[in-house]
Length: 305
Image (tube, rainbow, N blue to C red; front, side, top):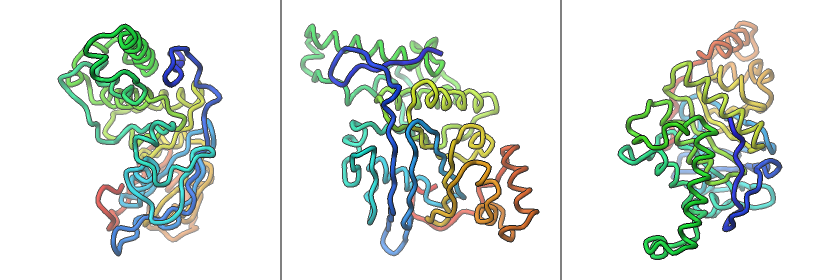
């Protein structure tokens, strides 16, 4: 798996991604939809160059948290910072330009276009040439497109899709299409990568390959990864730290080993009496096998997960 480098924004010179990761700080974020509080004073810190997972039963507020970080939703209170830059109140395209990439759970793709063209969409914010100069094929616009396409090839190879770049996206397997979404997020040259249920619906082999990509993003690129996922075996194998949400509140934050034994997590997932040995053993067993239930759905705002 080749290690990608990235062109400087607006420049052709390549530079490596390593060492450019940033911490992502969520500080006392509250989100209200009318009378409904979707998130209540949630705080977490994703350390630079780590994989930080966010888990919780359905309706716990995980997708709402991602939407606040990426600028889709506005926080009613609290703040989000990337390194020393405050993201709160910025539009999604500005947040992306500052270095927050997001791979969505539901892929917005063009099935009849090639894999290359779908991944190329991620380069839009990094492209300086406009419609007219590109249409007229002015020399500098042609050079810029060539650099961007070379970068797309690098990233496609990084996620194991270099051999299918020419194929229509719709002909790929479900697992490969999910990897296209991750590749498109990586083409924005993120310092922090948000992955929203990247292995949802995948079989065991596809999950293994995606897990390897997540680890490679951390280890080879040093990019900070914030991950939402229900597959607990996958979470336990890749996460450095885990935050747990329930009914929009942060109920636990710690290492995978700490989370497996946390009484509040056991109660949220299994409905057992907090702190019982039986509940803790059940969480450890089901986490190792990847079969922790998402739990009963909570009444929350639309688009929450």
